Length: 84
Image: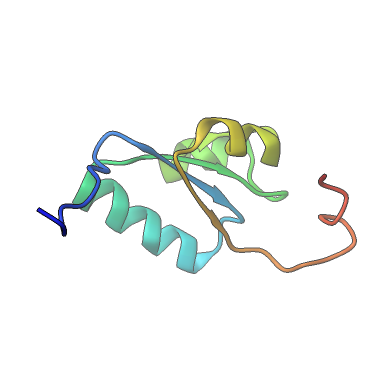
């Protein structure tokens, strides 16, 4: 009983930064564990999110509010340091 895990099926996985590694992770989680994928990236458009089968988030804050789990895969820069 000590090693029973948490059920992740049906949870929301948020991605901040949608690169190649994030997309491979998303595929495994979505198809292997039936997790809903949501994401934000400066380069992610609503149409691209539809094409990738990811729910589009307008801001990082929206991902933080909606996701049960979060992966951050973006370079640290002055542009994304403004988040508080």
